[in-house]
Image (cartoon, rainbow, N blue to C red; front, top):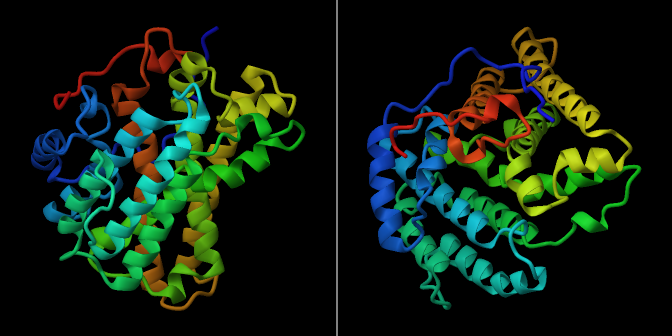
Length: 327
């Protein structure tokens, strides 16, 4: 069976990529190698940060890239999809908490591990660049929530009937989108006022971004995780638990993703036209622009990398590799 992704509408015709990407990515490969978090396929994910944060300066892009590369190292080496005995993943919990403590206050890691050693290096890059201590606390909290959630073996515990909705509430933390959205402020070099960031209109827009990024990834990584490892922790599988066929599940998910983009665009338009009243409107629209870049990145980057491509892919568009110079 081969299915097309052509129903997934592109949010923009072309990607928007940080102009510092090439220099930063080559430097990241060297440092990741020194820290012991280099992987042979690092080129498949080393490029992502430049799509997510096209406005970041070189130092901030490098710092974000190092953080994201560590998350991919964790995902690939210790992910629930690959571990035969999920109970063993509980051994990572103290490592994650130790790493989060280092990220928050720069304390020397109590546990010697490539993860904690890498976080200590990340802290040296982050420290002079963080917007403020409250941001760092929020970012650290969201990071440990993401890492802890990724250790939970929950896919078999979600019953059919309402599996997709229950899955989304878990995926919201597991996806890592909360710290990714936090990194907008780091990339900018200043915090977004809580008046904007915590406004119900804006949090609804944030939800569209987080869900779009995580659920598009469920489509692109279907072969990598479901077909290859038999994982059930995937939106397509959850929709099948709810009674959809495979083709129906994919069609429904694509429709939902397109709708998320339209909801986000609708919120933006209504804020701009003042149909929706919001304090600090111009700054709110600026923040919405930064959120929009993440939707653009989710679509274009996942098509641009070989991470989700295979000649046996379920999706026609992902059956041929793409040439990526950094790989």
